[in-house]
Amino acid sequence: MTVIYDKVALLGLGLIASSMAHAMRAGGLVREISGHARTADTRAVALEIAICDTVHASAAEAVRDADLVVLAVPVGAMGAIAAEIAPFLKPGATVTDVGSVKQSVIDAVAPHMPPSVHFVPGHPIAGTEYSGPRAGFATLFQNRWWLLTPLAQADMAAVARLRALLEAMGAKVDEMDAPHHDLVLAVTSHTPHLIAYTMVGVADDLRRVTDSEVIKYSAAGFRDFTRIAASDPTMWRDVFLNNKDATLEILGRFTEELFALQRAIRTGDGDHLFEYFTRTRAIRRGIIEAGQDTAAPDFGRSAEKT
Amino acid sequence: MTVIYDKVALLGLGLIASSMAHAMRAGGLVREISGHARTADTRAVALEIAICDTVHASAAEAVRDADLVVLAVPVGAMGAIAAEIAPFLKPGATVTDVGSVKQSVIDAVAPHMPPSVHFVPGHPIAGTEYSGPRAGFATLFQNRWWLLTPLAQADMAAVARLRALLEAMGAKVDEMDAPHHDLVLAVTSHTPHLIAYTMVGVADDLRRVTDSEVIKYSAAGFRDFTRIAASDPTMWRDVFLNNKDATLEILGRFTEELFALQRAIRTGDGDHLFEYFTRTRAIRRGIIEAGQDTAAPDFGRSAEKT
Image 1 (cartoon, rainbow over the protein chains, first blue to last red):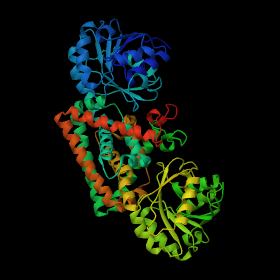
Image 2: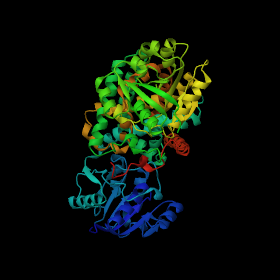
Image 3: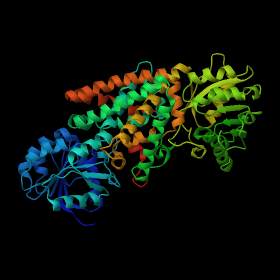
Image 4: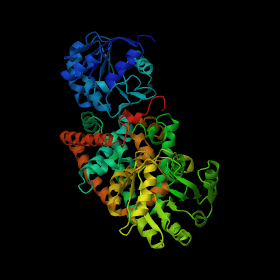
């Protein structure tokens, strides 16, 4: 492998940044990694597991001489950290982010960026229900999409270089504009997460069905929701606050369809239900054929593992 | 292992019945398995993969001399098949079912049962998104719950014998009354399935977000919903039509909570969202501690497999 950036600064050392560190090291893609985390705990863990060469309490120090700066903090914290590092960025450096929402990150970050710096917003569609620096692993991005939403005036060479890094980490890269990204993700991620959170909250609230029964009998479908609803609360709060319009629009569509199915149940319209459930089955096949999920029954969970 | 029943008749040869056949054979738990399926295709597959010793076009023939009869057809077909086999049941035989709803199955089946026969309703909380006789495997019930909802006048010895079979197949057995079962399952299974079907249907409907984008970027959460929404349409139609009251009640609660979260998004109430998302995270830990799911990130999906 070739070195793509001499020095990379990771700001925020959670699941995504630590996985990037593992992947970049595994591929020999960078010479030096500096890191910044807000809490002393996270910095101590990062040093202990050696995902960074240097770890800094100050984001401004971490970005010194960095050729690539990765903003890997919750979406709501992007603007503040961009303002903080702006005066210390190396001319010619590329700044990217890994936020799950793109337009609001652009609005918050772009105004702070000096003209000598290339800002290329990005979003890796990869993750697990775990968070923090210990959750990272080198293969997280293998065969996963990493979406870039470059601005109109983006420097082609800077985008190409970033893309080379992402592809070398195993990701497939696509480019689209930010508003379209935010709508697509509202469908494939944000609304599903909100719904999963809601269903788990309902189960947790019910007094007649005790916690222990919900947990014991969760294998019937509910446990898949709980995995999604175990994701990082700060990250998800910021996603919903920052992709408000698209999420509310898709939620509106969802509620409309849910009410139609609810009415079919109430009136005993079996044909409506059967047709609906048959249609949705096909989309699963598409996802497996596209290599975006395993065809193994139950995700390949084995009786031994569970 | 000891033989628990001499002859078992499986009526309906889908995922559950074929998994029972594999598990009973693997454990040497029965001497003979007869099977019945409505379609010639399914009967041919059952013979080809040898899950039954004999396969019958007639359910009445299949139950001849059987010590245990398992009704493994969709919930909506239970009453008709019970009426059909009733005159041919061996005195002293046990009849059980594997329906996901219990009260409506009891209402449909019990009136047909001769006094000489023990009817013990049951529900294995196990399954995958696949259906049909080829989908079965011997370990499906390992460490999974199998709920029995015996009637007030149930024969204790017959219940104990059935329980012994289920435990020998690896299941953990609990008993509860039918209405409580139906409410618990509305929370842990029926409503989550309806919601997953709805979300996948919404994604499928959207014109601005093409199918291919939804599929490509599904790893962001949506793909977990599509697995659930790929389940057998006939089975699920019948579940909703037959557990109407409990499902509508839980759906009502769900909608109420969803509207509260929707309002929090609209008004930018980050604290409400953060608190809600923090609370739901705990329930996931409970499920893993109870051995009902794997703690492996992303269900242990590996980059290689997907």
